[in-house]
Amino acid sequence: MIALILFLPVVLSLTGLLAKNKLVNRSNLFVTSAAYVLVVVLKIFSLNFLILPDWLLIYFSFDSIGIFFLSIMTIVFVAVSIYSIFYFKEHHLNAERESVYVAELLFFLAAMSGVILSTHLALLWVFVEATTLTSALLIYFEKRKSSLEAAWKYVYICSIGIALAFVGIIILSIGSRDLNSLFFTDLYNNAKKINPFWLKISFAFLFVGLGTKVGVAPIHAWLPDAHSEAPSPASAMLSGTLLNSALLGLIRVHEIFIKAGEQHFSNFFFLVTGFLSLFVSSVFIVRTKNYKRMLAYSSIENMGILFIGISLGKYGIFAAMLHTLSHSFAKATLFLTSGNILYLFKSKKFDDVKGLINVDSKTGWLWVISALAIMGMPPFPIFISKFFITVALWKAGLSWLAILFFLFLVIISFGMFSSVYNMTFGDKADNKTESAPTWNAYVPQVALLLILLLIGINMPDFVSNLINNAANFLK
Image 1: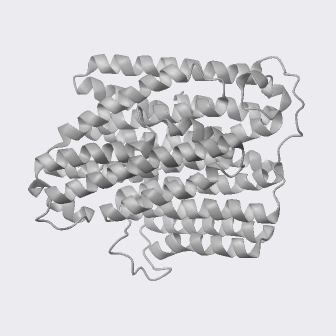
Image 2: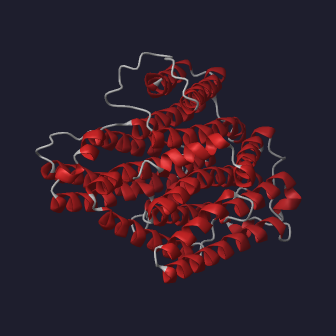
């Protein structure tokens, strides 16, 4: 199974680049989607027969939290694959350009799979760097000057971050020289033997390095540009899956501190960075004039919420895992729907988009409902996760932070929804618009929103177990 999801995207990417055929390109997307869905279903329901020989089990494995993050990535990728058919038509891509897009997307998927499944810290570092290189190509795909600037800014900042993470790995090796291993299992089992001084120093470097890829403040500068310049399906992957992959790397490092009894040190980093991210989001989300940049600042906000939840122990960690799932699906719907808006109005500026509900009612309602989902309006599950984190802050004796947390959420929600409302229900603009998008531009978002509603109203047992198992990883 591991070999299937690591190598199949790479093989199909190369096949598509050689064939340069539209049918092959689209088949590659859906064959990869089907393979990932099959593997995830088999692992969730513990049906462990082999599809390909798993000779890579030393360096890759399916643990509880890995299956959780892989499941999220798979669902988002399926949605993006369906939407990409509309993207091809919207931009009138020829077979060669389609081949390049699909290859870049599949290479990116394989790199994120490597991050999620890695059992070795240095190997995880390699795949995190691979996600930078593969996603940078997607950011530049439309070849505008602004896309080139965003791609170079992304590569530059994240490469510095990943270099700092490498320094952290070296320092951790110094602190655990008697252990002579960077396998996570060995690090967890022998965490108390690691020199606390070197462990703390290494965490500072790893936190900044991996935190750069997560996109939390103050190391978030690449994120608004990259998310706003990438094709809308790629933006959905960047926000809904890339940030999660880097977050998982930090969670695995955080587990070393928990096993070593030093979690108060790492929790402090998570808590402070989380609130700083909320502050930055609340300032910029009310000032931006670009709706894709608004969604990018929303991603910074939600990564901050995840960091706060992780810092609050078992109760907060469960909320963080629920929030991870909810944010990925809700943000994917928003970025995909933003692609519809860009198609209709040919602009990313708020002022150029008015009367969306009159131009295309389906896109208008998807835009509004998706915004309500990301803000956490009941019955969407983000309401539950935010409520649990607020309660966890009160239980931790941080009532003043709970009030501050609520205040930031109100400011961000007001700034976001006022913009969404004006775009959707304002007077119709004079822009010349295109004909309505095809069904591919609606179905993925509808499916993701229905999943969120199901989880928020009556969470299935297997979803609850998946979230609990992921949360129990940090113990």
